[in-house]
Length: 148
Image (cartoon, rainbow, N blue to C red; front, side, top):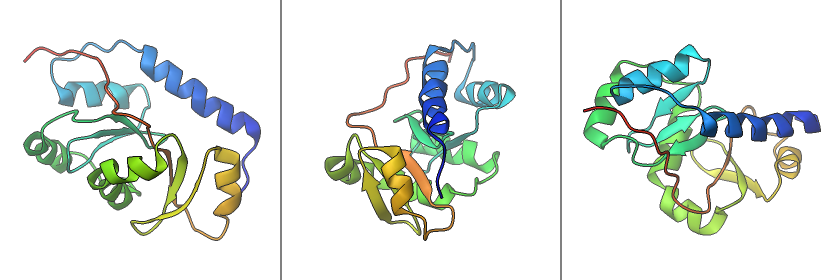
């Protein structure tokens, strides 16, 4: 599975666009709907972390786990939902070893890692559609507010 360099550049551009967005929302549910309206896939893990496409951790502790279970019942499970839940549950441990690196998760385990996305892609040709994500070196805080 080889992707052109422009694909990797677009991933960085996409992250910059999301970080510069201002979305008015009264609740996490409205915020998720706003992301959906502008074509950004999102998923709330069992732990309450927000994952965004290109399935990257968009916020940690986005909502409490009780609220996460409510949100999750009203949203479809994405293809990589099991891998994202596993990653979310094990994020602190994974961050210790892989912080700042790209990883490929397959069947709820890390099968490859690299400091660059092109190198990672070359390592995982044998896997069918693994979850590819950058593990943040530190906590991910998304600063937005909504009225309670």
